[in-house]
Structures are given as structure tokens and as C-alpha cells.
Image (cartoon, rainbow, N blue to C red):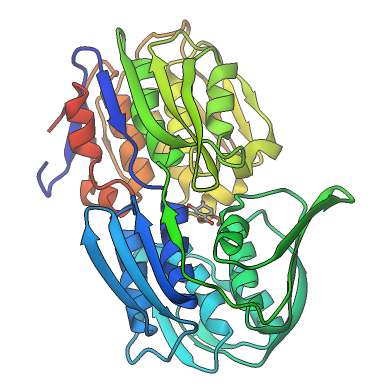
Length: 440
Ligand code: S3P
């Protein structure tokens, strides 16, 4: 890899067993909950990506003792609350980091100023500021609800908030603020999103009620609950496991197993979709680890066909559409991904960048306001042309998706900013090389 970019090219089959890096969502939460709690939290399997390291530094800035004991092994000594940081909190590229920390910090009578990298400074924070303002927090931000922003917290009151968009980050911010709001907080989700916050609140000793009623999920948290430090084992990230698994599905002769993958049904929409497409995906060694279901997932090279991906599946695979689009490029017939408008406000406008990247690699693609159609191949396994240098706008998943495509395309595929991959998957290049992928 050079600073000039990274190139993937077609080689032999991909084979081997690997372990997925720790789940990013759970890693951020483990650090934040540990800092909010009283006592010691031990975390094993923490994702040591740039995003999560920013959250670790932020928790230290809010007064927790955060210590790395070994690879993936961390200790957080919480104070039972946040104290005022004496400098700006820089969350780097991490939407989850900044939004959840804003929610947690809002519960305390402190001021904090947040910023991030160019991508994060362009992302909407209104979705979090709106409910937190209703609860009593005060914000000053850039035009359009952008970072940097300053939050003044404390004296919050209960909200019962119906999520206008399916966002686990917004849900989590409201619940974390609710921990220190008079009367707590309620969140109503018309479309269920990942429930790691609810599960982890319980693991730290809080009572959270969840009820499906009137076609929505109702989550209720009583106020004034204290969290107690605990032990968290972080399962493997299905959003990262997706890359070596799809690489195996599209590369002839391949068989790859990713061990210890989180299989929470609110995260497995990609696997459901790939199986519908005809992918040979099998799960073995299904087990419960730290209150979450995990398993080993094996992918073998497969002849796939295009499918219609329903909009209601979007929350369970929102980060996986870029890599699904790559699988779809090698499938026979069109794949239509619907109801994915949220993709436009991720680390980049992922609908736009995938449409541009795939088109540059010779794949028929049609962009919609809230959807993406990948035309697919005339017959399954007909390789994409490739042969492009793809603009990623610093988006780690756009970069990894196109590199996976390059491993099976006729001509090499390059990406412009490979360094950003370390935000979520620091060992990606080594892992893919270890499986036989040609990346240089
Ligand atoms: C996340 C929720 C999702 C997802 C992000 C992680 C979380 O974002 O895209 O990578 O950990 O809660 P939204 O809440 O914006 O949908």
C-alpha cells in the first residue's frame, strides 16, 4: 500500500479461516457505558480501529480511567458520571461515537464541544440535537446542524420520542440522556434498529422495558438508574465479516470461514439477502456469547442471481449495501435495493459513490433518490470489468467494497484513500492477503 492508493487484482481462490474484528457498534458502547458506570468494566475483543480509539480518548476526557491491557483487552474505571472535558472532543470519522457521547453527556451539568474529520463535520447532527433539546439540553452549532457544536447539559426531563428515521444512534443518544433525565426516556421505533444499547444497559444493571405494540417497538427506561461496571466480550463485526465473505462468494474456487460473527437478527439482513441470491453461506458453531448470538460463517464461491431487497430490511443491513452491490455485480440479473435513503448520510453519500464506482468498473447501475439498482451480469459469475481508480471520499466501506470487487474483476481496481479502512477494519489488508487476495 502506498499513500497514493491501494490496488486489488484477480488471483487464485481465497481460502482459510479468519476471525472478524470486534463489532464497532458494541465497542463504542462498551467504552461509553463503562465510563458512565460506577466501578470497573473489563472489555475483551474491543475493536481497535481509529473510530473506537477516539471514543476511548473521549471517555478519558470526560473523566474515566481508560487503560489498554493487551490486544483488544481494555479496562474502564467509571466515575458514575461525566465531568467537564477541558478541551474539544474530536470524534474523528465516527458518527456513532459523537452521537452516543452527546446523548450521554447531555445528562450532566457540563459543557462540551465536539468536532470530527471533514466527513463527520458534514453529517447531520440535528437528528440528535432535536430530541436532546426537547429534553432540556442546549446546543450551539454550525449552520445546518453541523459540527463543531457545543452542548450544555443537565436538568433534563423525560421525552417519549418517535424516531423520524430508523437510527440506532438517535435511539441510543436519547436512552443515554434518559439515564440522567427526570422520568427517564421512551423511544418508539416504527422500524426496529440494532438493539445493542438496550442489551448493554441491561448488562450494566439497568432495567429497560421493550414492547412491540401498535406496529412499533416501544422502549422505556426509567430515570435515575445507575450503571455498574461489568465484563463485556465483544463479538465479531458482521459488517466487517461481510468483506471476506463476499470476496469468497465472487472469487472462483474460494472457501472462507469467518469465526465468531455476531448474528443478532437486527444485523443479519445482508446474510439473508445473499442466501436469497443463491449464495452458499453456512453457519456453524452457533452459540451465545455475552448475551449475543454468534457463529462461524462459511462462504463458498456461488452462482448468484439478482433479487429485490425490501425496504423494511434496510435497518438490519444499512452498512452492508455497498458490499451487497458488489455481490450483485457478479449475480445474474438485476438487484434492486429499496428504501435506503439513509445511505446518503453515512460517512459519504454511499448511493452516489457506489453508483459512480460500479459504473467506472463497467457495471450497469441506476441511482434512485432512495434506492440503487445494479443491473448485474448476463450470467452468474461473469466477472465485472474493473480497471478503474475509485474515488472513496475517505469512506472505509466504499474502499473495502471496491477492493473486494477488484479481487474478482477482469482488471485491477484501485482506491484513493486506503488509510481510512483503519477506522473500522485495521487488519483488512493483511486478512485479505492471508486468504490469498492480491492487494498491493
Ligand atoms: C450504528 C447505527 C447505524 C450504523 C452505524 C452504527 C450504531 O447508524 O450505520 O454504522 O452503532 O448505532 P444510524 O443510527 O445512523 O442508522
